[in-house]
Image 1 (tube, each protein chain N blue to C red):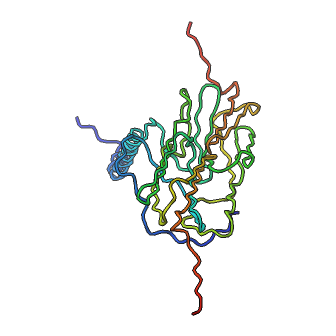
Image 2: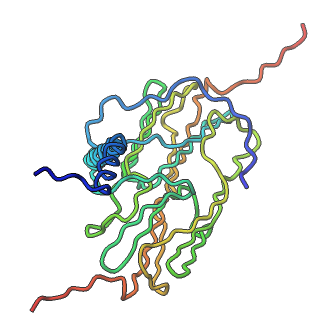
Length: 134
Length: 164
């Protein structure tokens, strides 16, 4: 059974790839959920194997950059029997449409899932404007 | 004096001539095999895993299996799944992994921009390459990586034999 999924509209912007990798190794795009309320934007990213100290989050010019380093988890004297997935770091850049209050960003990494709460800056919060009949 | 070919030999010569295109086909297979070996070499230099090709899995979860002298290690990526949502069973050489990944609702008044993470059930049986001791199985879930360490049975452990 798969949970009933809502119809989704994909953003047209392509996810930027890391330009020049300075370190060797594979780089993967983590799967993300992004949703917003009137007050905040929340980003959930699947990054299995990333510990809190390997996580880097940056926000610059409206682009959120997630980068997670994975330390090799295999022991020294283990030899491969079967390889079905590769191990590498995670990298993804996400453009954000609204202004973010940078001082109130919260990040939590739990069970390999990053949960990032980005409160909107005051001017981006929609206001109700009442029209009074003149 | 010139020896004449016996009838059987004549048939052999005929066959060899007749099979000539087939011989060429065999050579093609050999060159394919050579190419596959070269591809292996290429991938192993790229991924740094000599003699180990990357086999994508059709069934969730994809697992990596390694071994050392005493144990097999089965690892899978389980981001956002809690330990109590995974069930493991060992029967003979087979290790079964079942469970369900749930993604909680985030409330009513939200608008999604992207929704790529998926929820659903999974079950998979993995055949381990050697006999195992089903009493010594440890599993732990750290940062979304499940590591199952399965002890090898005495038969499957390598023995050091000293030469007298």
